[in-house]
Amino acid sequence: DPKRGDIITFTEPGLDKKALVKRVIGVPGDTIVILGTNVYVNGKKLEREEAGKVSYYSSRGRIEETTQYIETDENGNSYKVIYNDSFTDEIREQISAKCPYCNRSFIVPERNYFVMGDNRDDSLDSRYWGFVPRSNVQGKPLFVWFSVQFGNSIFDVKELRLNRIGHFFK
Image 1 (cartoon, rainbow, N blue to C red):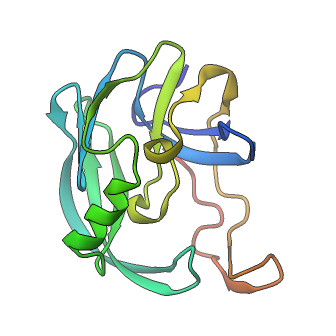
Image 2 (image 1 turned 45 degrees about the horizontal axis):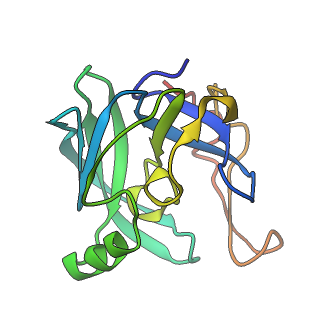
Image 3 (image 1 turned 30 degrees about the vertical axis):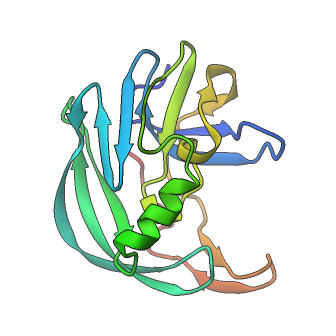
């Protein structure tokens, strides 16, 4: 069973049934609150410490400048997350308005998980489509075998991400 802070592979809930990789933020029974860029688990804020600037190709095919943080949960699990520096408070409010699991408190149901992408501003995850049932969990990834950034189609390769290939997950 996945634990809080684990990275898991799973089948996306809903119609698309895509295989996804995200981080477990909430396990069964956890109370989660997401307010802007702040995430609270069981009443404790996930603490972040700035770790520098990075850039990447966004899902919109643009190079984005971001701030990278080391986020730490209540159990001392630390991992890197990024937030897009070009997002204003107004943009974040517009996004939150479309986010069913933002700006409210909820409890993760039994045999379900709440997951978020580490690229917090460019990730469709549990904030938008809800909980991942235990039956959808496939396992934990070991390492990145291949990594490419696509543009508008699989024939539009923007970048072969060599620096990610071979990366082992904690």
